[in-house]
Image (cartoon, rainbow, N blue to C red; front, side):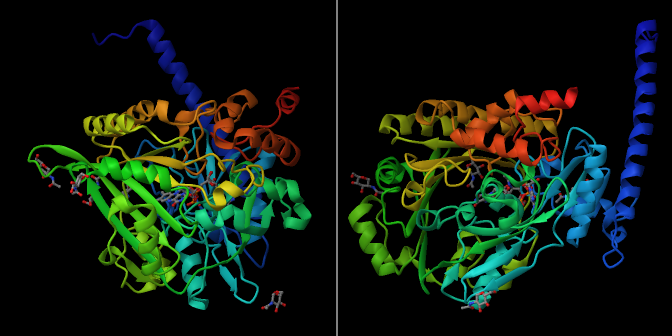
Length: 539
Ligand SMILES: Cc1cc2nc3c(=O)[nH]c(=O)nc-3n(C[C@H](O)[C@H](O)[C@H](O)COP(=O)(O)OP(=O)(O)OC[C@H]3O[C@@H](n4cnc5c(N)ncnc54)[C@H](O)[C@@H]3O)c2cc1C
Ligand SMILES: *[C@@H]1O[C@H](CO)[C@@H](O)[C@H](O)[C@H]1NC(C)=O
Ligand SMILES: *[C@@H]1O[C@H](CO)[C@@H](O)[C@H](O)[C@H]1NC(C)=O
Ligand SMILES: *[C@@H]1O[C@H](CO)[C@@H](O)[C@H](O)[C@H]1NC(C)=O
Ligand SMILES: *[C@@H]1O[C@H](CO)[C@@H](O)[C@H](O)[C@H]1NC(C)=O
Ligand SMILES: *[C@@H]1O[C@H](CO)[C@@H](O)[C@H](O)[C@H]1NC(C)=O
């Protein structure tokens, strides 16, 4: 004890030496990069004010401002050597040109909601291009369109639309703090998808900075690249500065409800009926099913609670007549129905009291932050009742993970699966989201909760899609495979790529190989370049 074996001493010494050497080269590379940024600064838009290094006093607060999964707010989480809070397109162009020259890993962050923190964490040295200063939303009601910069949140988009019109909206996610950049480039769905498709189905133009630092729009980038950045994930192709979106019509009055039933209240029968109608109801009606474990009315026992959360683009009378005819087992009553404007239904869905002033949608900080894990699945056939009962039993054993079932059908089933890279269309009854949230910090708590989520996911195998087992890109899940060195290899990329994009994966690879052959825009789950191009890099 206390005596180190010679081999250990040598190993330790060389490790220290190596890390000193490594640090020296790294610092030099970082210094060169910083210099390059400053040299590429325009006098009219100095870049220096947008640069934060770990030495800057506000570095930590800038970094933490958009960490939306506290699992990645630990001292052990890898941190960027620099954050660039771009406030002008020239800052993005400088970042791309300088980083590409030195092959430095860049991460682009808009709202920071990536479930695996891929926009602000990396296993290799990296910097963050932060988009939050680029967040203008210009609504053109006459043309029913809007130009939205990617640093905007969904709440800002909804607010700016509602400010101008009470009969327009936009089909996107239910959480107002989600960023436009990741959400729209990765598809983006919400409670109007059965009528209007995903967000990316409603993008009509873009402002985009490519691997050569060029600022392009739809016309100059061409239809192939424009196809890719509507659901293929922005991070594989370039930096999206703004999207032009098509607004959609909403009635002046919409109806929401949330109705809960436990197993003692016949939840199994009601869920069974939901399975057979949810994707076939009129496309104005979206009924999410949330499942979690709660205390039963019988003391000391647990039960499963099924919550039916709905948006209907119409009034409560019409809704009640549809429900009585198509989904009577829920027993929806007039008093369950909440009629509001569309924008107030956004508050309802975000768990914000509906009478709150709507400027709450401009708040960029979520009401609560937790550590979390998410996974996804697609269901193609109703689950037999015995299957449901088995699922309840498993959920009660595991207790932690919840599930959301989000019904498809309607417009989702009509849009061809090749129209944009997002492939999950006809044939899907609903998508499952697995959710685990926890407040404890540290790796042990994380492993515990992630482990439980994987167990529920494993249990669901017989009931969900297979070959491939499909997944939704915006429900980022590194369990599906990664390229750990940050340089996606085609064969590795195909593993997760097929699950996120099915048959569209190969087209994304073709486009990627053409527009970014040196694979500058990459992350742990990006689209790889063709194998030929990988080899060429090595020669
Ligand atoms: C609380 C919460 C609620 C959610 N609700 C929904 C929902 O209702 N519906 C739904 O579909 N999804 C939902 N999501 C998932 C969400 O759509 C994705 O996490 C989305 O990618 C987040 O976008 P972001 O800009 O906030 O994320 P970021 O973490 O900033 O980015 C996500 C990915 O996109 C890349 N990226 C970001 N901006 C750009 C850009 N300007 N150019 C190029 N690449 C970029 C990043 O590098 C990263 O790879 C939710 C997530 C959370 C945390
Ligand atoms: C993130 O971590 C920092 C440093 O430990 C801490 O000060 C901050 O409160 C954390 N953020 C949240 C939202 O918990
Ligand atoms: C539509 O946009 C064009 C170009 O921005 C503008 O000239 C025109 O007035 C707009 N149309 C309406 C009806 O507002
Ligand atoms: C459950 O279903 C049974 C049989 O259909 C019915 O008698 C009972 O009232 C239902 N319970 C609730 C709480 O709806
Ligand atoms: C659930 O029951 C347990 C005891 O069985 C109790 O400690 C806990 O507070 C209950 N939770 C709620 C939300 O009532
Ligand atoms: C985490 O803590 C918050 C605030 O105390 C609480 O409201 C929430 O229920 C907790 N979440 C979990 C998953 O324990």
